[in-house]
Amino acid sequence: MRIDILTLFPSMFDGFLNESIIKRAIDKKLVEINVINFRDYSLDPHHKVDDTPYGGGAGMVLTPQPIMDAVDDIKTKESRVILLTPDGKRYNQQMAYDLSQEKHLIIICGHYEGFDDRIRSIVDIELSIGDYVLTGGEIPSMVIADSITRLLDGVIDKDSHLNDSFNNNLLDYPTYTKPRVYRGMEVPSVLLSGNHAEIEKYRQQEALKRTRDRRPDLLEK
Image 1 (spheres, one colour):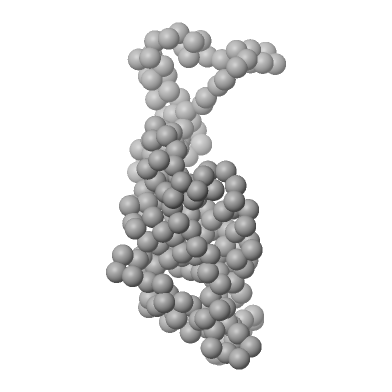
Image 2 (cartoon, one colour):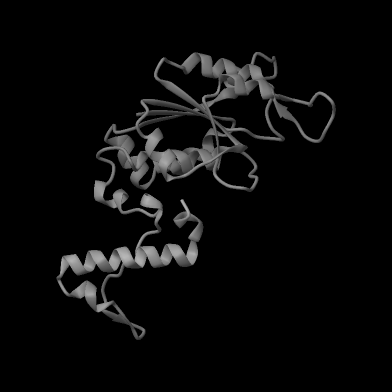
């Protein structure tokens, strides 16, 4: 898979691309992640990418030319263009699975007080990671790229993400490791029994209980 991220702040991605699972996936050539500064596409003599909004209002708005030209330059027949915006669809695990099947994603990071609405004309899907506002789309783009990359074949053990929270609309069950007793808290005895059928039953019950207590809205789905 190839993921191209359009941003005004490429250095924000230095740590993201050079640590942990993402770095290993890149090194193993399981994913290609490119960070592109769309300021480089500006035709303005001073490389401006924003301007004041028509009709007045606070702040500056991203102009369409640099972003749309950047997308035109890198887009192929296999590309899917994503715009990160507070009014996009709420991102979830099923979307991560769906997007992990794509061959090429282009993710546009907004900034400032918004973007010229004509940019939406080149977008396939608009996404939001939650009902709050950030200074830009860089952090959401990392969230989305991370959640997709870990689902690619060979990045992590398949069983690890099949048992993730939000699969089958359930939160994950509680897990434990050594020591068996810590500060008076004991590991549930069923996990030490060696009875895999009972362990699976316990985990299903705990996942259901945790979801009912913490996210009952998931059960309604």
